[in-house]
Image 1: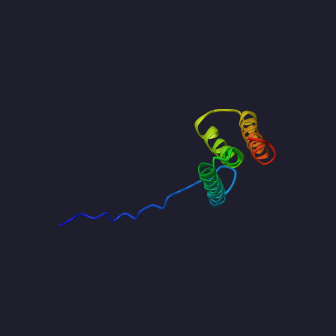
Image 2: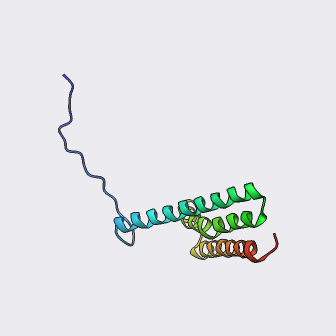
Image 3: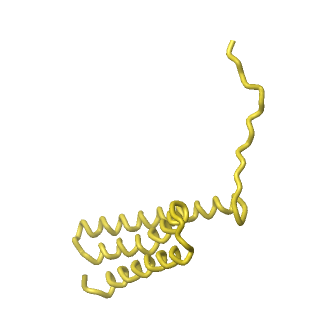
Length: 112
């Protein structure tokens, strides 16, 4: 005879600081969706670069990643794995966004 447990299984308890757990999960899902879409768009631009060797497409791909994927990764990874102050996190995400915008503008108006 196989012994079985008679105690009920306790539900998983999740808590979030500063708001509801559902709202935190939705925010993370939104960030993951935005990061995934930006990587997909950048991949398509990179495929265009490899097919035509047009440097504007390469700068467009790099700009999209720096504009969207970089700040998302920094907003998640920096507070999770380091003790960097809020000002450093804000500065790093802003610099990534500005570099991304610069790359996109250079791909459109520059002569790469």
